[in-house]
Each structure stands twice: as structure tokens, then as C-alpha cells.
Image (tube, rainbow, N blue to C red; front, top):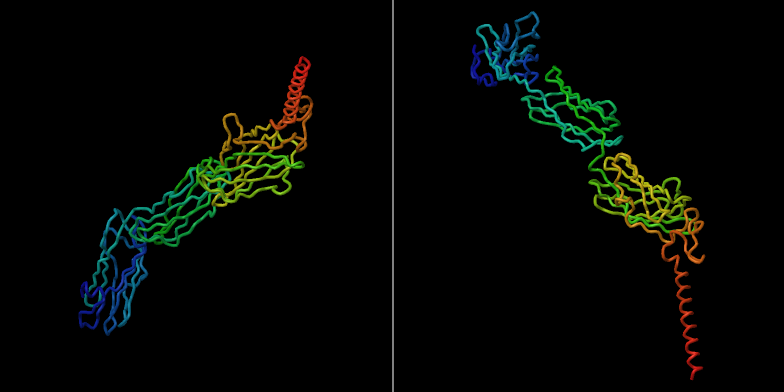
Length: 424
């Protein structure tokens, strides 16, 4: 008996005692790679009132080769009324890519059933690209790398496992898993990468098409460098005031970088020691192109080298630090280019001579004792004036000179007046 298309869809159009039709076709994988093995399962339903006998089920095609079936050595099957029978074939498919129609056929006691199966062969592998990465990888700072995996095939793939690795690299997590990826869909995976040397980050991707495992690789060169988007704190308007037993240092910090500096804290480094009200100062989050003021109180025996330490985090929680060595003893506020962790140096607010912008000293005495005079720092005529004290330290000398000149003028005028009176 030949099965019509209507009957194959499960609609009974005959009054025959034995009414057999193909009710389902299942393939795994849904789309084959060339030369790939897979299974084809054909389900037949007996919608009649009597049992039916089926013989010699097979698949006819010059592209699809049967490797084995679940029937073993038996080729005769009885299907009771109102039940189903499923035949499963292990097959291998030849190239090229395309759509094929192998013919399933099975005999009955009086005729044969023929049913065309639609099969697709596609050699396209799943694809992957680096969809997100930083402009540079700072030393020992975690940066995010995004990998997008996409499936251009006509059927789903399953059990995708992405393994990331590289010499001198710490990757978190080292593996990501996707249970299935539908046809024409994609998934983005994020990895935290901490680089301790120049290297190559390798993404090894394995997946299954049916029970067949396929692999692919993606590589990303990792070069240690300064993050061009990182926060860059710049120091301005440094001012020092002597408070007798300690010093008070104030200033501004401007973020000239691209991203925010989170939790920015300013402290004094050794040999200086924080003391009194502000041993450290928390500015907090400093947005790009924004400024914040700070105030520090400290003691130090040598103002020619006072380290100012700035610490902050980026949005991923990576720690950054930048140290500026201030020369406060000379009153010029010079400082070196500083050193940073994970960011470029030379981010200090310096002019070409290396002098800090807007530095001033208010009431600053010698380097040894706050407010004290250095040896040999006496002013003109032995009174007033300490080095680094500015013009104000000569005010007593200037006032004395003015008084002396005025006295001389008055004395001279008095003698002139007296001589005039005697003549009269």
C-alpha cells in the first residue's frame, strides 16, 4: 500500500483494516556536517483495528549510508492496532552542502510504504569574535574581555565549552559553558583577565553537533601597557602652612583621565607621618574632568622629600596608586614625576621646570622644626627674616628703616628752624 501525503501527516483516508502511516521523523543532529555520523528515527503509527506486519525497513540514497540499525538481525516487526513502532538508523552523510531527500521504505504483507526524508548538509562551523577588550592591559590589573559565539547553521548545537588560558595570565572564570545555542543565534561571554607579562590569550571552543564533537580557537594578543581610558589624577594648588608642631598641606586633584577614580584617598608617605586632624583624606569618587580638594596634617624632619600618595579603584575594583614626591623645603613646591601602579607616570601637574602649579608656603619655617629658623637665616641687621619666610619676614627691618629716616629728617628740619630763629 502506498502512503499518500495526507496519510503521512496522520489523517486516515482509507477503510482498510491495516492503516499504517509515518507519524514522525527525528534526526540528530538536525543539520549534518559532511561525512558526519548521526541518527534518523522513523516512527510509524497503526491507526487501524488489526495488527500489521512490517518488513525490511531501510533508507535509500546515494548520499546517506546506513552504518547500523536498532533492529539487529530481525527485519520483521508487528505493530498492534493503535500503537506505534520506531526504526532508528545510524547513518553517515556525504558532501557537498545542500538539501537531500533520502527515501524511507518498509514492506507490509501486501505492499510497501515509501516516505521521503528531508536532510540538510552544512559545513559551516560556529563562529566567534572578540567583541570587547580594553585599549591596553595594565600590569596585574584585571580587565574584561568579551567573547561572542554565534551559530550560523540551520540547526542547534549543544554542550559548548569555552576554555580561556595563556602564559602569565590569570583568567576568571577559566571556563564558560552553554548548554545549547539555537540556529542563527549568539551568546556573549565575559572573562576577567589579569596580565603579568606579554602573552597570547587563547579561547578553545568545543561543542557538539549531535554526538559529534567539533572545536575552534580564537586568539587575542595581550600586551602590557597603560590603559588609555584610566583615571589620571593631577595635583594642583599645593600650599603648606606651619602649625607649630606639625604642618598642614592643602591642594586640589583633577581627574584628567577618561574614567572615574573610585574611592580616591590621599595620604602622606614615609618619612613623613600623618598626625592631628587629617592624617589621610578621602575625596571619594572623582569623575572625569572633575576636581576635589584635600587637606593633610603631618610631621616631617626633611621637607625636601615628602611623598604624597593617591590611591583609588576603577569600576572593576582594580587598585591603583600614584606617588608624588613634593619638595616643600625650598618653597618652590617642586616634585618628581611620581610612580604609579597600573597607570602611566608623568600625570602630575608640572610645568617644564618641574614646579608644582600654584604652590605656596604660609608661615613655613625651617625643615627641621616647624616654624623655626635655619642656621644663618637671620635677616638684615640681624633682626627678623627666616629663609623661606618671604617678604613678610623683613617687615620689622623695613619699619625700622622708615622710622630712622623719619627721625633724621625731623632732626635736620629742627636744626634748620633753630638757625632761622637765631638770625632773627
